[in-house]
Length: 214
Image (cartoon, rainbow, N blue to C red; front, side, top):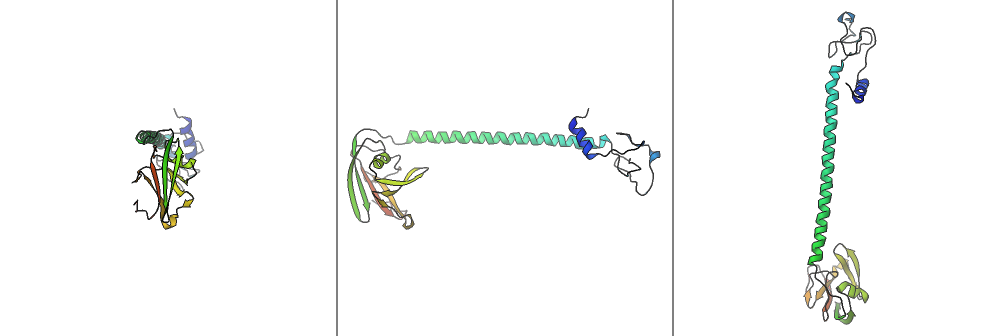
């Protein structure tokens, strides 16, 4: 039993000839065929002697219709598999991001809130300015922003400090502010650097991106 898709495909691709000799799905009687030059034998040996069109039986087109149906099924399965892979990859990426964030929070140096006094030493253009500030902040960024001592650009790693105490580093001249804590170059950014009472924080305007000398 043909479904609507198969019937439509046959209607679009097969022209059924008219005339008493044309029987849908059967060969036209050979006695009705003329042997004029305009007549040619079709794929199944039949044609309409008036129009010159081939009378192709349903059996000839059934394999084509069935092949297209199978191709459509294969395409749908492939599309489904690709969609599934994309979803799995997206979920895996989210899980990885969550794991990295959790690891960052776990490994991040822990600061302690509470009253404390820290010293700030700012060295630029051959001069060093020293300040003492009081803060309850657990991390350096909050402590310095409360005093209006720093400005910078946000990045995926936190604040990139470009200005300290009003002096802006010239990136075109490879100037940048190097952060030190208690005399050692800080391995953490300003967002993740904890502060304790009595800490000495140093900012040195440095020229050249390979120089981290105190």
